[in-house]
Image 1 (cartoon, helix red, strand yellow):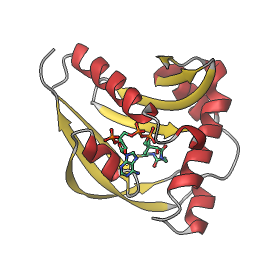
Image 2 (tube, protein in one colour; image 1 turned 90 degrees about the horizontal axis):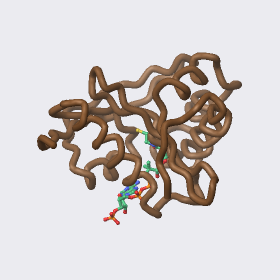
Image 3 (tube, rainbow, N blue to C red; image 1 turned 135 degrees about the vertical axis):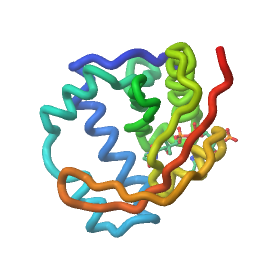
Image 4 (spheres, rainbow, N blue to C red; image 1 turned 90 degrees about the vertical axis):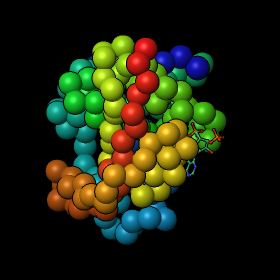
Length: 156
Ligand SMILES: CC(C)(COP(=O)(O)OP(=O)(O)OC[C@H]1O[C@@H](n2cnc3c(N)ncnc32)[C@H](O)[C@@H]1OP(=O)(O)O)[C@@H](O)C(=O)NCCC(=O)NCCS
């Protein structure tokens, strides 16, 4: 597996992985209608810009299998999505390790995220602790229950 900074050319595939991952794994925790709204529509220009600016992608055999991003100013992790046929093979953990390393190298002492309910056990396994319940408001008008989680980082 190879993890690298994304480019603008990765945006359409990153957008497709996001949709596939949400529909494959969030279904047990959220109403089907909410997930349909959350994943509906075409890729926006702001999503494409965000991919080019801040995403990192995991590749296996030159195929994109996962995405993730970190805001190194705030330590916020976002967009952790793994292609459904590669879930459960360590891609999510590898992406998180990579982003954690970037955070440590940038001098951050902790990282945080808003976890979907289905993904909270994954983040707990990686050393994150629950801070509080929260609500994610998508630009398409859907609100989803989430869990705010943080992880302290040991110095490099
Ligand atoms: C959640 C997600 C990112 C995990 O990625 P993944 O590549 O499948 O996870 P990994 O294979 O790296 O798993 C790492 C560890 O977490 C555990 N784990 C992974 N997903 C889990 C889940 N949903 N519940 C409990 N444990 C989980 C694995 O068993 C593994 O444990 P181990 O190291 O002891 O064997 C991925 O399944 C996904 O894209 N889900 C749908 C989208 C989503 O909700 N993203 C999060 C948005 S906040």
